[in-house]
Length: 124
Image (cartoon, rainbow, N blue to C red):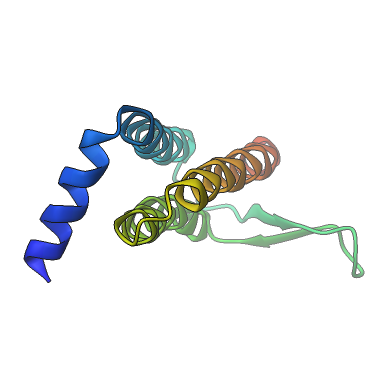
């Protein structure tokens, strides 16, 4: 298992485009986690944590520490998607690994906009 991971890392580092995209993706996930961590403010008041257009109320409220789950999401996105990209690339499917990397970045971008919207409303 350990040698497979090191071999996958060596393969990816040999491909400059794949290595650059993977590093950019990991750094973007790290920036997302830092952004959410800096934006959180402890409060005794309940804050908006969820928005939906469906249902009786548009904003759902809970304690502020529920928003820590956004940081966990960013960390899981970085680790799981990086592992999947490495596994796909190690199997010799470079084009699919590149596509998956771009789609992972798209997921992160959508999550960033959603998180920005929730955090903007959460701490009014």
